[in-house]
Image (cartoon, rainbow, N blue to C red; front, top):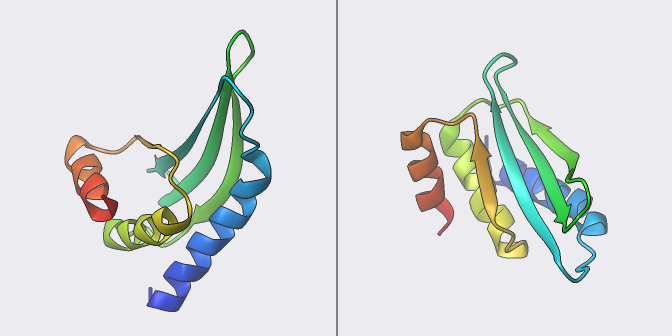
Length: 104
């Protein structure tokens, strides 16, 4: 995956995320990255949770390039536009440490 593809993925995720991020008081927003081991891809979601309501998980994008290095580059590019906390699901502890270090 080249730099242009990384930027395209990051911009697409940010574009799809923006309408859901409304900055409502007492609302928590979080970016969720899921390692889909069955389909060999990474899925991006925005999690919206408010007090006394159900948590909503909205799908944003799927990346078919199943490479951890490229995912780190996409997260780094996405982090320039978006400062939401990121939660990694279905990743090993080593992979989580690697990904956290790739964009902080």
